[in-house]
Image (cartoon, rainbow, N blue to C red; front, side):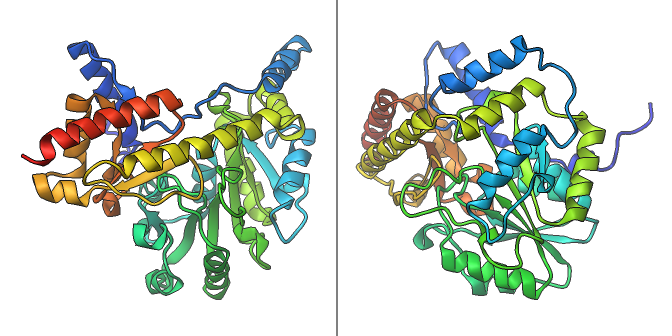
Length: 397
């Protein structure tokens, strides 16, 4: 048979799913039930009003094609919502509705990148940023997010990464996996460098409502940035709608918007119609359940931070956003001469709790492990008690 595309070996994946597969196999073979404290899945069900809107759309026979960029009424709602954080008023024509957040990355980066281009990617970060970059033949230029700097970098560090081949900067705030939030000053500096060097920005703002202290600041808040930025957002995290698979790209660059729409048309034709009506209800309907979920995440964050810092060899800062907690375990790695992946494997097998090694998200995650505080308070207490008991039992050996 003819050989496969030479591009395919360059395409990575989310190694977090491989960890889950291994955990499920361990449960099957051992008969042990694990406590899952690693998952990036909202810890609540979709609010009732959104589910009802989905059902109503089906009953109203809203089950046919829509225009590729989405229902006009939904695009208008997204434009209005996005404008709240920008220095311009977005319009419906600036919005392309797609099947989740990942297609925004694929379409925007396909429209932009050629072999030899460079993309500055925070590290540790969401793995698909780097995966798509390398698939397209471009080069990932990592910039370290460090715990001591609240998982921000400096403008000096960023400028040092820029070369004549740089084409795109990835921005994610609040961040997955660190829970870090970029400061307004840092975003202003990124904006100035993007304009100075004529760079694009892909701003992943999927956690924009999950800021526990302060406010969400979009890079499009700075003059000159809406035209060179594509915002990635959607319903998955804030509205607990991961299975609905709906997201959107927003940009003031008409040529980029046209290319994203063209790629979406070739790929999926349009997004599930019922899901679009659900998204419309999510954005424009009652927000009480959403506010409750967001407050609960903050409460669970505070609980988890306190309990983690009681465990020997583990320490963490309180994350300002999203629902992730990156914990420094360098002391444990040095003591036992193991990697973060090996530590997480031991904790799974001996303490029966699943967490993720920081290296799942990049080289600069080696000193770290990631927790997620979407789990119930009961599971958080249970899981961390088991980890503490296990670490204390081996720490003195």
